[in-house]
Length: 117
Image 1 (tube, rainbow, N blue to C red):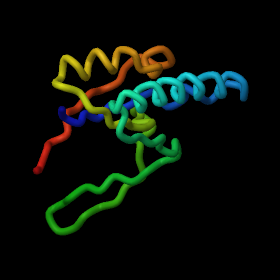
Image 2 (cartoon, one colour; image 1 turned 45 degrees about the vertical axis):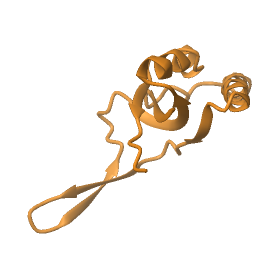
Image 3 (tube, rainbow, N blue to C red; image 1 turned 120 degrees about the vertical axis):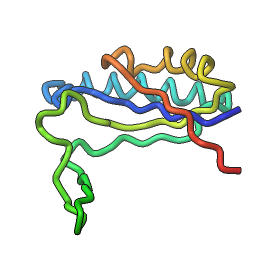
């Protein structure tokens, strides 16, 4: 089995107008999904990222510039990630299709993690 990262993108303002009960219901969906995958040995790790601006480092000819990000013109931001175990991309896709992120958002990205052993 290989590790795959599920990159959980969403619109920058996706959660801005939700009330507390709506947020709790969304969080419950994620928790239930993670608990089910964890009991099967599939879920490995994951974190929600803070929605405030992070930093982007840009290499120029003589220096490295630091910029605030994500930029306001972005259509999506990376809201978090999860690491899962799967046999291959097809298996990872089948697992990702059950992720509540696709109920509450429009997309997620799957990337295989390079095994350095």
